[in-house]
Length: 165
Image (cartoon, rainbow, N blue to C red):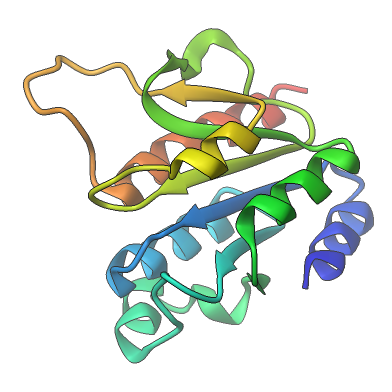
């Protein structure tokens, strides 16, 4: 649950760090995001109950053992969950190709990173609920990264920013 995720952050003496997925339907991407979240010290992963991959055998295989360590909250309404996180002092950043470069230094403190679906990105309503957007600078030859790859790059940046504190 979200409360378990907040409790884990408090127990570690750290600002909360969450990852939310918006419409990620590929179980391999879900598993890879969970694996990266555990690796980079996220206190939990937020997954909508609908329009999302479940914790299937394919997800479990892609997570490569990380499910045993991950806190996962299945939520009914991601937009409402984001609003609740913001009320508790969490900055919410959506990954988007037209966002500010992640290297601008906004990925620190109490934060929730939102990763969108493989084809559509972060939905309009979820994006409007977020505080800001971040992007990964690329050559522009191809217009997007795989959802789990983008999540891993951005989680690494958050981890590095937290480690410097």
